[in-house]
Length: 460
Figure (tube, rainbow, N blue to C red):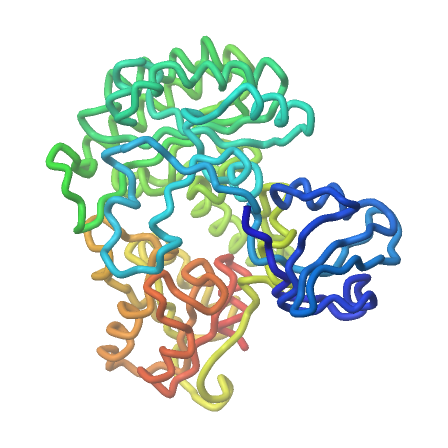
């Protein structure tokens, strides 16, 4: 077990009043050594907890003065204090196998930990799930969980996971649903492997055997230029269209049988097929918005609502634990800018985004210009770092952004950058936001990846 350390303290919080310091190691709470942030949160939720910490002077007990339910006011260095349950599958389509060498070590960690599924929406295959895990999930009501299904045919699933337990691990999904745990499923579609007739069978069996699933997100395979699997390929336009037809058929069947659509295709699949995304009601309550399902629709509808004089909606947030110690108090995605005063330059505003972002934003450009009062220019960022069919804004990296900015010869007053490309102020390639200042003196404003966020960033 690795003791988590305090890396942020909120001013005027019980932790600050008690004298906790950044760098303190958390050892125990009320004499109990927590194994993860879930247990930690339950313990510190009590009134007046006693916390054992370790600093340069050794271990000491700190008594805190707080009411039950009041936040402690610290952020910890990790969410899992004991060993993360790593993945022992060898999925040929796993994007971690397609990462370039030399990235930070944490990006190569394959987890299959139900706790990270609960905390952050990571998808787990359940191949390492146990009776003890089930007992804890049920007792503590740890939901929603997110489960990778991919295929219900035991042979196909085993082959895709390259793990014999793939044939039987969906029994845990049945057990979770039997105990009324909320579960969302995912299918990564690999052309020629689990699409077509295999997708048809999977959807039929999900509806027959796992109809208690809250949703099933269906996303196309992503391939980087580092892929070494010869049988993997991306969807053709016709294949994407055929799979969408299958998904829509089973949406209608689910609506007829259980009163809800259940199956939802990713925005990317519609773009590959050259089809418009469905209207808002087709996504019901957007259960897998952060999985890239319905983002285009919510963005477009937000712009339409603003054009009609409506107010900016609250941001869509999924998951119950997004705010505890994983995120700093100001938020990873707080709006910010680098470079000179953004009001100092005139000219159009450049929107940095991936190819799919350009496809989604192009039809909305006149409305966005009217709402922001500025001329806007879409600037497509080619993903040379990952390559392949990587085209989403969330996988843009600093080196590609710098390359794009350095070669941008058109007039621009400022650049807008969607927050989804950053974790804190760092891109996936370990380039920092400040590193981009070397590429241009023009301000770079990070904005929330929403219609209102883009409009505010352009109008600032």
